[in-house]
Length: 266
View 1 (tube, rainbow, N blue to C red):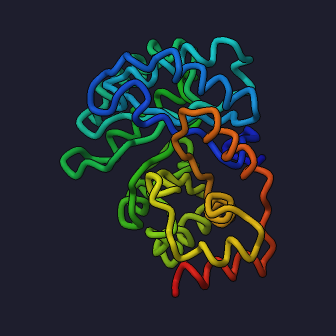
View 2: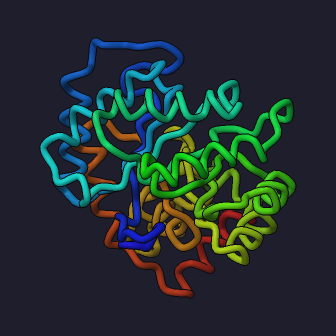
View 3: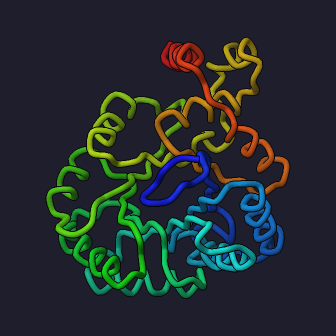
């Protein structure tokens, strides 16, 4: 478990992009995907990541159905507001619509999904502050923000604090370790890493070192990424979820971490 906001969350979370559709709703796998989310939670993955954009809201509906069987306070639900909805009133409306679809009273962490240069971040963060005061969200975060975006957001936020930045982080996109991650660490902003397994394209760079460490490539990859982030791979099959659950127990020592890092950057 790791600390995020005021809660302990699983060191690997469950991403849901593609569950319930991508750009539009897809209902054909609903029962399977709800059961997959339930199975992940039952096996210790209490952090679930979704967004109003995923399946045009249907992903949130599936998450809402899945979490009904669990104590809400034991879970950590992340959702996101799409960049066209970053004006003050639109943010408030988007959050309320997400809450309806999730069928819950609050969102643990609400993120700006992507920066929108046409809408002042100050206006968006003002709405986030209102949501915080209204107890509709418990934490504020961002997604896909670079250092310039983050610097502006930190400067403009007058209420609360930015606790997380959700960005792509995998062994092909490791370069954020050189600048963005240190900046976030300095400002106590947790990195949440989406596409940690690069959508199934595991880097061949680590096959040899994984074998020498007695790990699978997935275990090696997630063990490495966990050191500086909370990875949130998407999984909708029981076998894949079991792999992720096993990875939650992996804690690389410094030598193992550095061997993987050297292989990745070779």
